[in-house]
Length: 81
Ligand SMILES: [Zn+2]
Image (cartoon, rainbow, N blue to C red; front, side, top):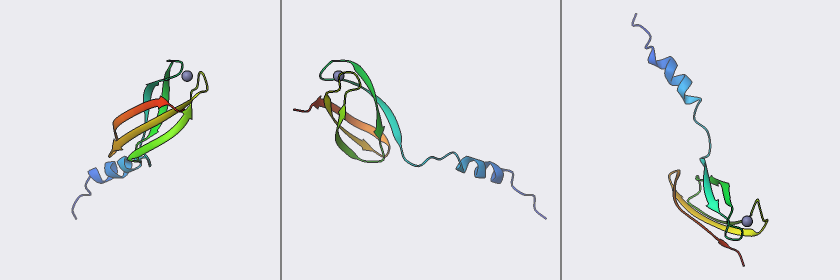
């Protein structure tokens, strides 16, 4: 009988490493206190626009970013007034 292909076992192991959702970290500068902050981005969505409070001065930062197939295209931060 034909020998079992050895690559079959490796393929099954590799499949378990894929994770649902695409997340990435980004460095931004707070437009109020100019501190550098690290935020978490969800790149499974093509367009995001939301308010996040600064971790240092607690002011509302408007964060807008776009992504394509899990890659960050643009990232903007602004004061929310
Ligand atoms: Zn701040």
